[in-house]
Image (tube, rainbow, N blue to C red; front, side):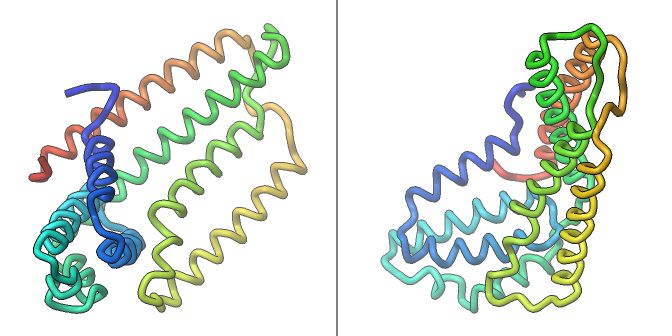
Length: 223
């Protein structure tokens, strides 16, 4: 079990490698299915397990020379809905773990860059923009990979979730305006000490994230 490369990353990479072995027609169907399932707040690890199973079925269909949609035995959207109904676990902890990791790493990277750019001053601090970029980075990662992209698949018509997403964008715009109007240091002190604290926090979140996903993988038959 490696602390530098977790099982979630490994499974995602395996699925990406498997995609190269799928025909264009089957991949077109799979792509819509993946995007549709990604819209729901389901376990990210289980989503990758489902993707692995679907990729295997698509490859079998290609080898047998049949249409992947025929192999499913029902319309793709209905098949995806059946997977969602059949026990997919909703895990918000996964999103929190990823969000915390992204926020801390982005803040550390931004602080380090600005600190070096300003000549490594003794008196320095964490700027408002660092926290802003960290939270926005985590938010963008979420909506890009696990939220908004599912809207286009099969013409999803969940108005409540659409409106909620629009509301999030409005709040985000207000936050940008607030940050621009009030820039400055959130925390200020010894620059080197702050750097070391952020470094330790970044290392803790990075390795903690990998430990979490490795433990999470033990719940699934994914190998």
